Length: 99
Image (tube, rainbow, N blue to C red):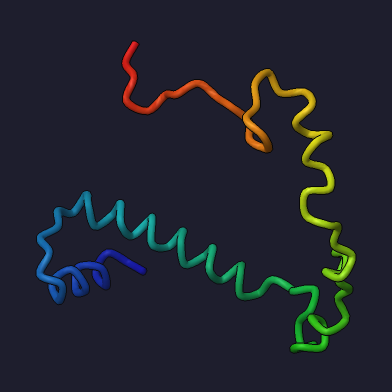
């Protein structure tokens, strides 16, 4: 975009711009437009494949039916804590205290 096109756009947007601002904006907009053009011309890995590319992917996560019994590891995890109250870890109260 040249400065004259930007001058017309700025007038439509009711923006007052100096010649230096127009030149600077022209340079910035041209850089952005070049970048967009490069993105448009980039070759994509799945171009033209549509949803087939998504369907071919494999689920790498475990099945949900392999769940363990709740609380099976609780005692083992709580063995190493400094203080506990039944199945809970006791921590220092921090809400409402000031140093």
